[in-house]
Length: 301
Image 1 (cartoon, rainbow, N blue to C red):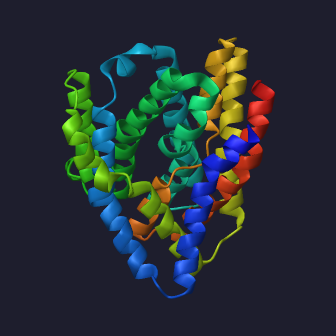
Image 2 (image 1 turned 120 degrees about the vertical axis):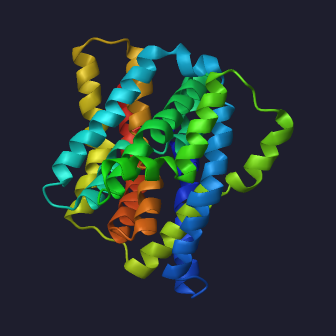
Image 3 (image 1 turned 135 degrees about the vertical axis):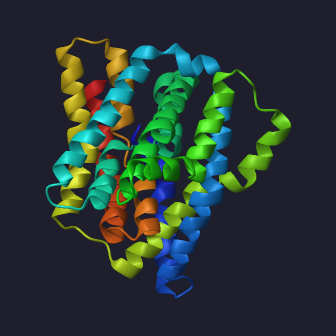
């Protein structure tokens, strides 16, 4: 299993260091990383999310309610709690992204490599599909609304609904819920550019880490500990107390223990908010997950 974890997480580490190396050789600079993120957020990721959600079978969306309920409560509950905690020391915009760093596991990227080997293709497909929907349909609109907090409530809602990522997620969800299957001939039209979204976003993080330096300050260390260890541990203790089925506990806890996603850092670069801290959290969360994921796997088995 350690070998599985290594090969699931290694692409992230390699891509970060390639971005770091490219920046050190002056191939790219901080301005380029912002351009890359703009491309990811406005074109590549919306295409990827739209195709991914539209291809999610309707039965996956409505089939496993206990799993969906626990992932939904855990991720949104964690986001709200961490937002309140971070608001004591940070602005609403920065607190939003730090909270998202804890609540948003990289399920579509890392989970797609780990979960099928642990739970089989069917269960992992349901888990990945549910997490993708929670993140893009519910969590991201809340985050966008907080990032645009200086506007009125009406303008914040309208601004959020105009985001390409939100539009693509909602449209894909509606089509999937209606049971309209994506024609196989259209898949490559969305995936040709969309598949590179995660890689380019991580490459941009490597550039930021070189231009802004890898940090190990208080906020970085605490956020990584909260994401990798405390968040899944607290949810596990709650599930143990409620005596929920062991298999459900395994799926939920190992999903939540996956390292943080690229989205908080990507948004940090786009909005010029705590880029160094968020990129460092992404880096150290991935490194530390070799230990924490292995630990949770050992305990839960």
